[in-house]
Length: 153
Length: 256
Image 1 (cartoon, one colour):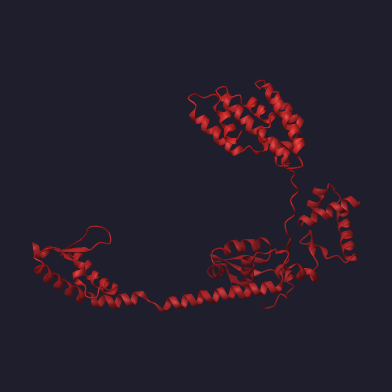
Image 2: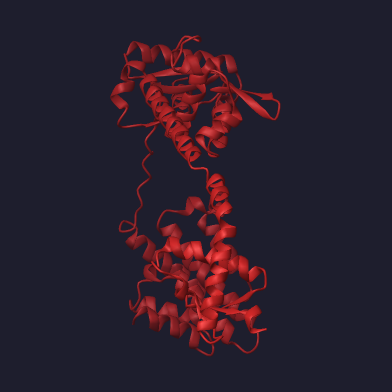
């Protein structure tokens, strides 16, 4: 069991993986067993007051830095959202609801790619609105930045 | 023996016994097989092929085989063999056996393979590649960073609005309309001046600069515009010997 747990730890250190992927990579078919082992790992991280934690985001497990240490690693690690993409996200969140055409007018053509990435990552929602699209921040956005949903930014 | 000599020995020999040449050079330690520039080797080969009068596939086959062996030796030696798909499935011995199954192979090739093994064993430490270190991991974005990004995005928005407002102040169409009203008067003036100068100049071509007083860019434009209108009406011809040289005006009606 120790060896399987170590394998799971190594895998979720590399990338966020769901139980199906973990099953495929470890060769363990029993997902219940995998889940138990992950829960054990989570407890072990808590017990030894590690700087890391195991998070479950949308069914995918990943090793992440504990919130209280995020400031410590700001300089050493790159943010997971690029600067320009983050500016586009901030602008959309500030407007709460904005037409894609208006975002592109303000943030240039490059924002088409930013919007695509943000939709794929679940930070914004895109709904058809005539010839353009309406963009709104999602619940994931508010959860990620620990902001209440009605918060004005 | 320098690298240039090796290439010429390989490619200029009529019999193209490249195996024996390399074998001898390695054995006599005249070349470092790890310093053979495979790219240059291939370029030289292409040049040789271009110079050949008739196709000889045995030569091209041999040279491609030589390059492949050298690349394989280098790759294995440098510990990069994970990048070769075949290496994942078959070990070196099997691959070598496959090489030697070819009925056209020269016995020298066997010597080269044995020698390459020996060299690889002796110099492995020198070229050992350490496993690549993991790149920096990405971290979560903080609210502070989100707010900074918002400030920047709003700033860009404001700058754009300012630029737009600035652009609205200048309305080129209105300026053009105002100037357009003055144009007929200017045309009459220039036409009269041209006619006068044409007579004075004994019906020779008139230089455009003769119409100018201040020679300022503004004056040039002001006088050139009526000239274009007059030329368009077929009253004058405009000549220019070469670009940016003096414009010569020829009054057609007066001459006819």
